[in-house]
Image (tube, rainbow, N blue to C red; front, side, top):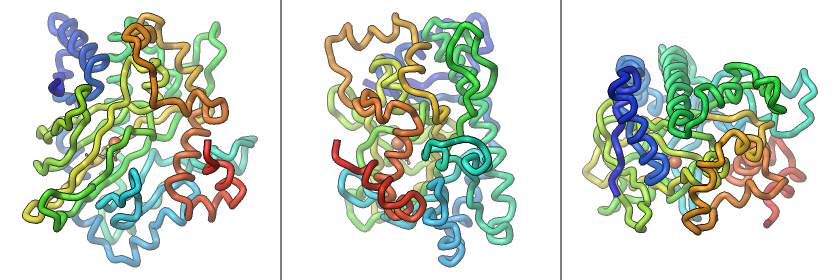
Amino acid sequence: MSIPILNLSWASDPTLKPGLLQHLKAALFDVGFLYITNHGVEQQTIDNLTDLLPDLFAICPEDKAKMSKLNSPHFLGYSGFAEERTIGKPDLREQFDLATELPVVYHDRDFSKLYWRLRGPNQFPPEDAVPTFRRAFTEYHDAVQELSYRFVHLVEEAFGIPVGTFDHFFGRQAAKASQQTGDFLPPQHRIKLLRYPPSDQEDGGQGVGAHKDSSGWLTFLYQVGDEPGLEVLSSTGKWLPVRPIKGSFVVNFGNAFDAATEGAVKATIHRVISPGPRSNVRYSIPFFQGLPLDMSVSEVRNYVPESVRRMRRETGRTNDETQSFLDPRWDSLGESQLRKWIRSHKDVALKHYGQEAVNYYTAAD
Ligand SMILES: O=C(O)CCC(=O)C(=O)O
Ligand SMILES: [Fe+2]
């Protein structure tokens, strides 16, 4: 298995587009991981943000503390080196979690569900500490958001459903009158700015442990520079390197997408090995495309054609890893997101959601 590279500029050439869609189908259904090049996001927009990363991570500890995730019921802000764990081991990275800049909604509308508190504004670094950061971040966010919507249109074509079928998930058009769903509050997308310092272990260390993405629908990852480390688990059980290709994004699929397609498009397992002792710092920026918090995966599934959903069933393999969406308690995106955040950040959860919520969301299944 190798990781396909799709040239998105083929989408605007009628003679090349059928080939692109063919490649996309193979990438979606056979691999679940791909690179995209000529994707339409200006290199300058990317560089304006990536050039600031060394300065951002070099802000003083007091400024980092002021941006701590502990301040944020939305789990947005700074987490220090090795503070998060995956599969029981610390991840040797430092990160800023950001998102689409949105106001809180739970104060002034009838949003009775606790998960609405996930939605809210960013904590930005002080403007004098990293001048132009907010502008560079916002431009990057807007450009990748636009790419993500464009890419979803190609996925619709690959699925053989009308272009725009998923638009109302993103507040881009009302659902058709005949359909029950619609009027969702447009989602908040999440962006992590990640820094992996060189490890003192010869074989690197756990940059981030093996996982599937649970924060969104599709992930668009930008790997800064040439430092390797990202690996994806192939269907034969081998770890394949996903080396940076200058200017490309890596696309992969989150648990919700896997569940919505009944496993036809897999949420692949991936990990990052930290740079070794003589390597450079590695930076990367995943963009997790969100879905409306009050939408349920079963609703999303209604828009995915039967021809796609039966693919996994026909292979005879069960859809093992997305069981949590099958539990009615976690079927909505909001419930599953809140559960995930509370489980991974108990300190933030206790402070902003209280012991009762922590007990509820962390109880064994
Ligand atoms: O840093 C990377 O290349 C990947 C990060 C990742 O998989 C994640 O944060 O979900
Ligand atoms: Fe990931």
